[in-house]
Length: 142
Image (cartoon, rainbow, N blue to C red; front, top):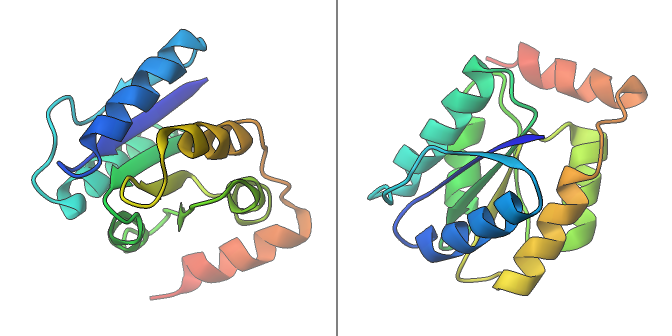
């Protein structure tokens, strides 16, 4: 599975740890920030555009608190990014919201928890069906 990752300077150390872990678990990692972006807007938009332009199903963004990356990414039509700091939300946002990306705050989530969240997220498929109605509604928003 191909996974896009990116971070600003505050999330860079955690991103590097997760990158190594993903690679060692046979994921194909596309790192859009081999050097840390100055700001979460820059890094999250790099991830977002890589996902949308290349039809990639899963991505992870890192910054200090997660919420900034999620807000910036969700401004782009067609993107669904969830700010996640525990496993259940990582699972449910993939299954019910079709999240194309997670935003994880390095100042909130440590390495062990980040790996657990990501594992739940990567191993969960979007359920579609009745949940697609909400995604369609989001797509129609101006």
